[in-house]
Image 1 (tube, protein in one colour):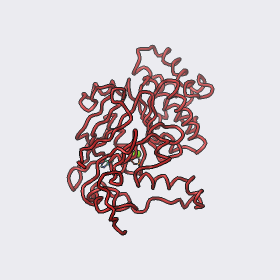
Image 2 (cartoon, rainbow, N blue to C red):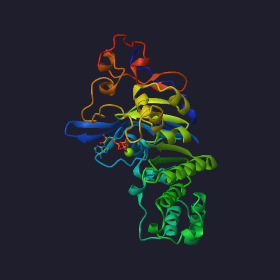
Image 3 (cartoon, rainbow, N blue to C red):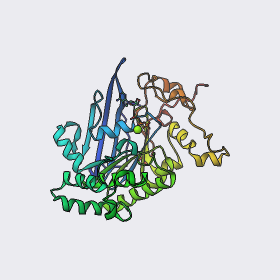
Image 4 (cartoon, rainbow, N blue to C red):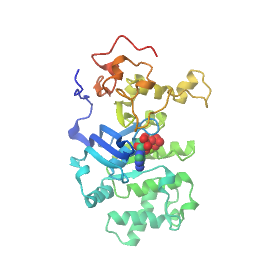
Amino acid sequence: MTGARVADVDVDPAEALLEVKNLRTSFPSERGLVHAVDNVSFNVRRGEAVALVGESGCGKSVTAMSVMRLVASPGRITGGEIRFKGRNLAELSENEMRTVRGNDIAMVFQEPMTSLNPVFKIGAQVAEAIRIHRKLSKKAAWKMAGEMLDLVSIPDPVKRLDDYPHQLSGGMRQRVMIAIALSCDPELLIADEPTTALDVTIQAQIMELLASLQKRLGLAILLITHDLGVVAEFCERVIVMYTGRVVEEAPVSRLFANPAHPYTRGLLKSLPGAALVAGTPVGRLPTISGMVPPITNLPQGCKFNPRCPDVMDICLGNEPALMPVGEGRSARCYLHGDEADPERIKR
Ligand SMILES: Nc1ncnc2c1ncn2[C@@H]1O[C@H](COP(=O)(O)OP(=O)(O)OP(=O)(O)O)[C@@H](O)[C@H]1O
Ligand SMILES: [Mg+2]
C-alpha cells in the first residue's frame, strides 16, 4: 500500500459547509517547530452535528481556534486549507476574517474562559453583540436581545436583560453566551466543551438547547467534548484525534458499535457505562494505559504504538495513513491495511 491512499469519507465535499484539508498548526519550541495539529482533514455539512473527541492535549481546541483563525501567536497555521462555503479562510485578511467570525461562524467556550463583563447588564452585552452585526438602534437591539434570550430558553427574558452576570447561574450565563454567539445568525457554531464547567443536570439542559437550536435554525455544530455519552446522544458523526492527528472518523452509531482504531476502543472502554457493565466501581474507571506523548517528542511510526494493545512490527516503521474501513469510515491504523503483520510483537 502507498501512504497516499485517502479515506473515502461519506461527505460529498460539494455539500460541505466547512472543509478542513491537511490543516497544520505549529508552535515554536526548543526542538524547533512542533505541530499541535498535523495534517488534519474533515468536513462539516450544513445542519450537521459533528463531534471532535480525544484525550487532553490531542489538538481539539487548536483545531477549533485554527478554523476561527484565533490561534494566539507564536502559534500559527503552517499548512492546509480551511474552506468555508468554498472560501479558504486560511488566506483571508484579518479584516475579512472578522466578517466571517461576525456572520458565518461563531464559537462558545467552556464558561470560565468567556465570562461576561461583570459591570454591564446582560441586555447591554447581548445588544452590543447584535449591533456589531446589524444596523439597529440601541432600543431595537435591546428588544432583539430579549428575543435572543427567549430563543435560548431563558425564563422571563425581558426581565433578565436588566440583570448583571453575577445574578445568573452558570447554566443561565452559558445560555447568554450562546445567545451572543447566535446573534450573528451563524451557519456554523463551534462549541469547545460548552458544558464542562457546569453541573451534570445543567450540562444536559445546555446540550438539549444546542440540539434544539441545531434543528430549529438548521445550524451546523462542531462539538468538542470529553463526554462520549453526549456524542452518542447529540452528534451524527465523530472525529477522533490523537497527538494532533485524526485517527478515526465515523458515523456515531457505527463508531460506538464497532470502533476501528485501538485508541477509539480504549476511549470507549473508559466510558462509565462500560465500566459499570464490567463491574468496575465509578471513580476507578479504566483508562487507556500509558501517557499521551508530548508533541515535542512523538514516537516513530504510529503515534499510538507505545500504548496500543494490538501493536505490530509495521506500526513502528512509517506512520499509517488514514485508510477507508467501510462506508463513511476511516481509521489511521495498519490493522485495516493490506500489510497487517501476522507476527505481533509481544508486549
Ligand atoms: N500556545 C501554545 N504554545 C505551545 N503549545 C501549545 C499552545 N497551545 C496549545 N499547545 C499544545 O498543542 C497541543 C494541543 O492542545 P489543545 O489545547 O488543542 O488540546 P485539547 O485537545 O483541546 O485538550 P483539552 O481536552 O485539554 O482541552 C498540546 O500539546 C498543547 O500543549
Ligand atoms: Mg481544549
